[in-house]
Image (cartoon, rainbow over all chains, first blue to last red; front, side):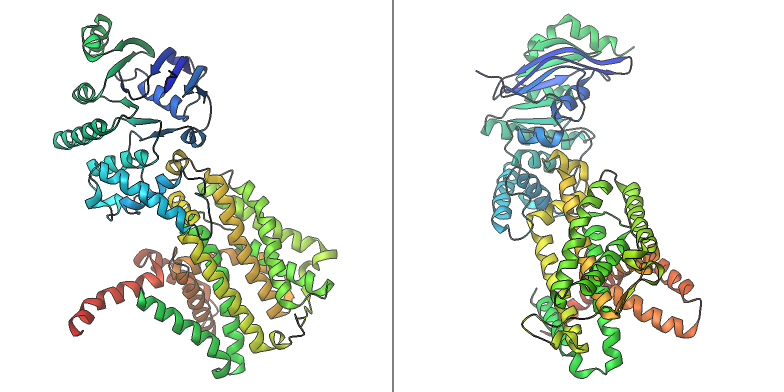
Length: 250
Length: 318
């Protein structure tokens, strides 16, 4: 079986700093994979390398067996990677529905039509509706996104990614900056989403509770290197991981 | 929705009826207003819908004027074809300009448009053998036709041609902003990075909208040259770009209709103020500042606010 995502020997230097060194990661279709690590471990860099925002200085990224190394984020999207941003990236003056519809439209081949194109918009609306109802966002669909609560904004962003029906859904700290209640709600929503349908998800997250309740497998980065990769229990018992996290405290 | 349709219909009928009602000198002013409304509306596509601020829109206007002058003087094409062809020429040239300008974003983009505008001005000024230098090109004929029509070359006929161009452009632009393409522009206005991540190559959309905006500005310029009978370098000068930008902002950006109202407001105020004082520019500046500070949504924004406030009262009576 071809892996959904395969990172091979990924390296990325920022000047003399090696943010990533020889990182290998394989995500199988239908798997929810978390990438964790202390601050500055290289999680975001890895995420951005896969999403095409940062170009790797070494290594290769494959999606469904196709090489996407070094492509722009705009092209990578069409290979089936849809992402959310660590700091919500939305269209604040547009309604939640229009936000999601624009995302869905991005994957349709006639997304550029300057005149007419009602069919394209209808098709995108349908995809947007489906994605929003799966995340229980129907009630707020007509509200301008900029006025929504932080938690709702994060979920709208997930709906945008989901509406593109991606091969791999990439979530960059989905509960970042949320209150405890909002985090619970988001985790519940994501959990029910994942139980309804097998999605391939790559998740970068700080909050360990979130990681343990959502992820099938967990990869741990520390100082740019992959130090563990396995199920929750395997990772918890790994001495290198314990050192990294305890070491990170001093 | 219904109410908007009625207002549109009434406005269109008023525009079409004007030659029957108004005296000759008023038609001159009205024709100029229609042309400037088209010019301002074209800039709104960039400023209001895509947040691409152009300081060089006069370049497109002047190019259209010179294209019209050269076509009218050197060919026997009938007037409507000259106008359309001039617009297309400007739109085509704009692809190259847009390609260069969209390498930059934000302020740098605005500065590049200014640079291209001033470049066009310099060319018009210096390339005497083609453009007539500082004298410009004069004696531009309005050639009759097609099908032997002479109507469009008369004063009311030319006015109707200008109105037809304005309405055609307006309905085109309205369809454009409601289309999938228009949705992408809105996205670019609010968060270009995100639009990229959603799989759109935003630069192509920006180049397309700049070309379309320049095309309609060129159409306005061509109409002006035919209307005035001359094309001069001043049409390309950066102060004209500033004026049209003021029209868009004072009228209400991102509305298409607003900038048209802005153009009317600007010219009316200019006429009235210049009768009273030579330093009318100063007062125009103060008015502009007042709008930016107290009515950022422009004239149309104020009108909408007032009708929205009036609506509950209407609800009670019905």
